[in-house]
Amino acid sequence: MPFQVGKSITYRLDSTVFVLSGTVEEIHKYQVKHTVLQETDNNNGSKTFVVQRLINNETATGPWLNNGTYQVVLFDNKAEVINDNLRVLALQAPLKQGFSWKGNSQLPSAPYAQLYDMAAGREMNEWDFTYTTSGNENIEGQEYQNVWTVEHHDETLNIPPTPNTSYGSKEVSSERYAKGIGLVYKDFQLYEYQGGNQESGYKPYYTGFGITMWMIAHD
Image 1 (tube, rainbow, N blue to C red):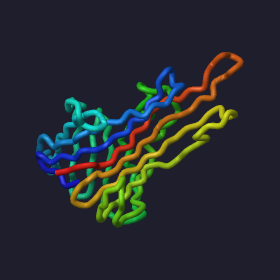
Image 2: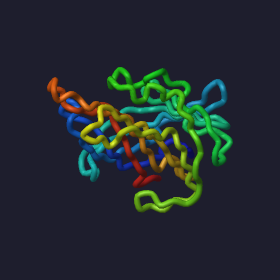
Image 3: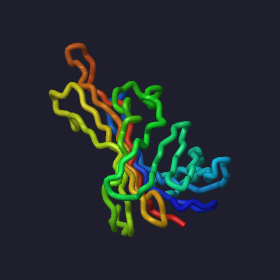
Image 4: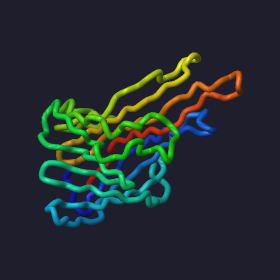
């Protein structure tokens, strides 16, 4: 995470949403630019960076609109991301394959319960973050050197559903970081499926969301 004021990274972002009472899945496509606005020093010796998000349409032909801010706190041996009062330990030393840590341990139980009525994600604070792979990678047509993958969670049940599926869920999350750049890829899918009841007139539906994003430019 080589942060400095003025540095920016632009991502393509695919947002999975469920509309019409969860009966229809849509993919909304955007570009999102993350720019470091400010740096402050904490009393504990760490550095805090304020990052602004700007959002545009898929081809960035519209206006760039404010999409909020978040904070990144860099310590000697770890990096924390604070977004909407949710604190995640994104990176942790030592940087070696197989090393694990509880990256979501500071999250409350069911952190998205106020937004989505679902069981998926209730135990996110127990997820084990693990360095799984490292090396050169091609991500969405771009070549990167020294990429480290952090697997957060990978659990899928009855997704995609069949006509006889009564319940399904998907909890999949991972990130990839390239040395000298920072975050270059993110996949976060958190949703569940309810089969409904035809006799009672309840249609099958989904609840939750998904985000897939990859870097397309940086300075």
